[in-house]
Image 1 (spheres, rainbow, N blue to C red):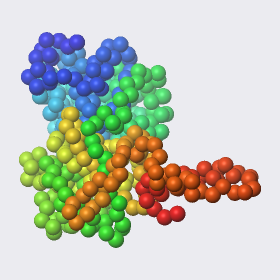
Image 2 (cartoon, one colour):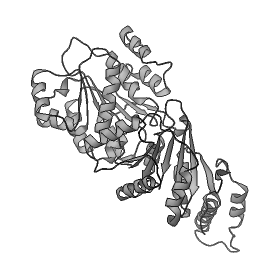
Image 3 (cartoon, rainbow, N blue to C red):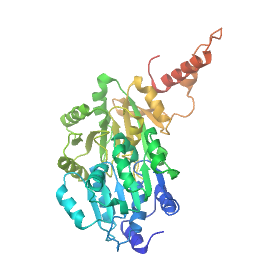
Length: 414
């Protein structure tokens, strides 16, 4: 499968076996021109493309042979570390914000790296605008976290970058496949070979629902935190202004907590991440956008202080735990009014368990939602049928039945 030097490096890193996405990509790499890999966060996607790419780099050719494009500086640094850990003598260069731009451009006038890892913005700057980074020589181009690229409005920038690597082998990886990616895939990937392993159930995660009310959300969050002792816990909010509120709440309660927002400077962000990895903090409060690119090993718990605006974000949030065959727990605080959102998430293969906060802690009150419960059957039967059938009766009756089921499952008012 790999050259002996690569195999030795893999063994030195302690690989015992490969994950499903890794096996699938390894098998397809030389058989297909373009590959799309869909799998949840935390299933080994990075090594899935990194190992075959590095294995095929020609050390004698001092030109750009592969480009890995990721959406955030944090991810650039993480992928760079994973590549360098293989220790195969490849000239690897990562481009992130906060470095000496003029010096990097000057270095490119004298030497081109063999493997480039960068954000779309850096590729546009160095390769397109300045024409110093010669990515047109690359035979492989990887677009990782593609759904994140869409969220961060990088697609226009990527159009320019892809025009410079139009002859390269293209690989795209994503945890979800939003509708906005369709046109992009059709334009650049054509009939690509698709590996679809995005079923969230492949991760060992318990998804818990905790019913709350807006007036008691903060109180319930603290009560929930008292029911478990995490190794690392990530707490997600959907509004930037809530980051400070939740951070202050936990800090005042004596929790060892950090926060990352869109206003956090690059240097400060790096220091916070280093402290989290050193376990100087146990809890991290962040938003979906601000947390993009954060990769922490050992996250045992994720708490959704509130549901995300976009359902795809739930997959990203929950994928922070349950990695590398470890177990994880995701708790979501939700209100009766959000029952429909919960139902839509469940349709994506998430099996929820319902929990209730008590004076003694927390207890499960409902089994996994499969089929109709006794309460749901009773709710459906409670929908009265009219004595005289009116126009659109079936449609209106179905809506009433669905509403009754939803209320029976998740609570709420009629």
